[in-house]
Length: 371
Ligand code: ADP
Image (cartoon, rainbow, N blue to C red):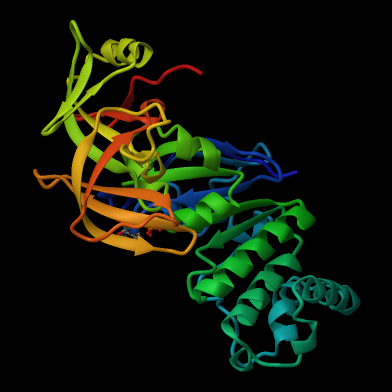
């Protein structure tokens, strides 16, 4: 069992830098939770407070219902894997993995058994006599993970463990870490700035910005139901399109932007009206932008005339980068069997059921239609 509970956990460095502010959430037993956000948002600080490597300025932290604010790292029954592996270069792989257990005076046989077991799981058993310098980046990262596994901790903490690996290896290790999680049935907290890593690995994701939690949700809920403009823009690649405009309610209910007027479906209009927002931002994902002259079977908004600035054929799909006369940019995803050319005109339109609206002042999502 290992649940982690944070109540208004705050970190203020040097009496002025608010690195994490009022973080409150519970990490369930055996959960794989990802802390994600841009550089400097406070995710490492949050992880380091859970590890006990950083003092908590305010609030309380519980591991398994025991308050641990003042418990030193070695007594928290957690293991941390760092981005730079932190291996001892002069020790063999075996000794690197065994080091923590030796320090804790485990019997030799037990150490051997645990290292053998962990190295088999991680497929590094053939390299136990090598030194880290004679290993690839991926193998070194496995040794670092192995060192955590042999401790059999209640909680694993990962601080951007894959960012030093090349793209292909990162994808492979991502899958391996998820398999490891399933196998070990341990609680894992994983920090990354990469939203794709977060989406593919997390049972739930905590999105942070400027030290403040923006949303805690499953990957699909974050994607389909973002609570604010920041989350909507941060999750998803290419990023969601944003168009500034105003909402007008009366005889007809409309979203209006320069060169674009969209009539709002009645239920959405009723919900948007409740928010009393006028200035807003319309958000549309790239897969919800259509070529109105070719995709007429869809339930689409009014047409929006745009010029093709760039065409990106990816094989399985095409991305079009478009610009309206007023400079508004837009990206759309379309089928790979179509032909588009730079400089051509596309009349785009949006799926009426897949539009997001955000209050211009607060960035909060408005007009959520209950499903
Ligand atoms: P992230 O991991 O999301 O990149 P960090 O948790 O490292 O963010 O940092 C959050 C904020 O706290 C940043 O503004 C950073 O500059 C600041 N910070 C981090 N560590 C220290 C420190 N030891 N002293 C002062 N400020 C720090």
